[in-house]
Amino acid sequence: MVTRSPLYHRSQVDKLSLEELERYDRQLRLLGFDVESQLKLKRSRVLIVGVGGLGSAAALYLASAGIGFLRIIDDGYVELSNLNRQILYNTGDLGRRKVEVAAKRLRELNPEIEVEALGERLTEENVKQILSDVDLAVDCLDNFRARFILNDACVELGKPLIHGAIYGAEGRLMTIIPGRGPCLRCLIPREPAEHDKIPVLGPLPGVIGALEALEAIKVITGLGEPAVGKLIIIDGMDLSFYRIEVRRNPGCPACGKIKIEGI
Ligand SMILES: [Zn+2]
Image (cartoon, rainbow, N blue to C red):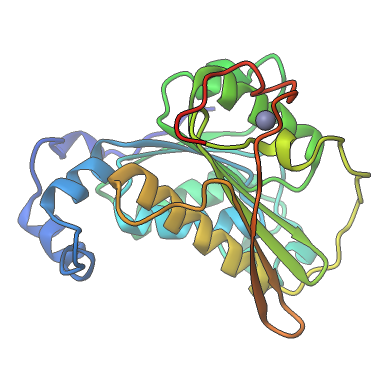
């Protein structure tokens, strides 16, 4: 299922309209962020895998920042127990396909961008095709089996991946740039046990999802220093923030054979 915003085709990728200059005015005032940075966002194509708690925040911030093309993939339907954290959805959306509701909401938020909705699950069979024409992927998944499928394909295709996860009251984030630092398999050598329903307070995936969007914007524009080789851990209970150096595993089955710059 693919649906597109009708307004998108009016937009040009080599300049910003007066409306866009006004829409993005507050980020254009940021030191080191100029019209060319905004055009980089406008020309960029980003895949968001999962539009649950993490994906809701990441997608809203990436759409509002002006990422020109967002592809969202999720095979779920909106359930009542999603609504404590999945802020893309309202009570009136119960029973509807998540990607359809999400795409509509994102287009309403920013009609300047194109949103493509895929109502399916990411698998070993479809992952490379889904990644083939995007610049970067954002991991907003809720299981490690799919995370490793995404990680391995991103490493093989050389696409940056922003990893985010929630473990109870703890949130984690790491930015993976193949060739510049470790990948998810370097960080987590074995697939952890899967949990069906992880306990979660809504603000935590909101924070991690927002940080994933921030990292994506930084990687695309070259702004600042993305968390490559750095695992960010947020303990929601005492509000401690940790940054742990992560080394590449030379024997990593995913990235062990690729040439690494700098590290
Ligand atoms: Zn690796």
